[in-house]
Image (cartoon, rainbow, N blue to C red; front, side, top):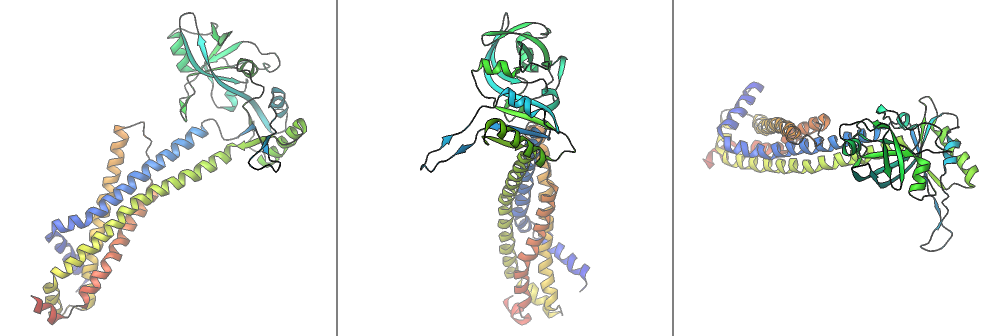
Length: 399
């Protein structure tokens, strides 16, 4: 019996038992569709989070106050944190390879105009925000340089805050009250959206020194440093440490590079994607059990057919190939339908819930389809071997 004859006979057998074949493939269809849907959600979340972090650039080093040293006291630690000052920020800006510096203070305060008021995010920053954070004013200008030593009461509004306070009229040059002080509006920032539930558009920017006074703080919350493309990050980190240790007397700060954050986030999100793929893979394993069970039942029901084939000269290898190809065909058809169903459901989710990030993970799709074929081969071997071992006379006698 030729290969084409075995394949044709397998298809005819499958089509003759439509309900049984459909139930056999159903487990694989559901499993592969689940893998595609879950990995698409995981990959979409992965790229969404990475895009949120990289929208402010990737050549950034953040300096945070805070290192604690223990002194042998059980369960106790003594804080050795010194404030990060505006002078620290100015000193860091003079280091070789540093292009720009942004001192950062963040809080929440009430913003008032003549007729409206609301609480909003207040970010105390420096003039280099457009360069470091990759955002720019769409009207007016940002905070002028030189506000570190003698800060003036200037403010720049986010897009959403501008609409809430001034509607369609221009806020440029107008006075607003932030906390207990009055500020003059210099500009309006472009739409930036949310980053990890922090609305950058519902924000007002003021000089960092003014924010320190407003929130009665001694220390900056962080200092962002922008470095050049062709600069050694290790060398810059070493220079930053040397400068701050010389100023503070010891290492009482933490340095975090944007690449470190991205690498950590990327590894976590990759593990998340693999975890959800494994959950979908459980359905594939269930589907393989279904194929084995139904193929074993098929061998029992077709003993007479096997005996007849053996009686007319079919060898054991032919019987083995026949049942193996049936299982492989069922898994291939089920895998293909599962792939199409999964892709279709992901497309439907994207249309119905556009805010939910989804992205097809083609490597997982290919792996799921190949796995379905392997399941068909593995789950078809045992029933095929059982069918091939039947003796012709015993099989015909059972009829």
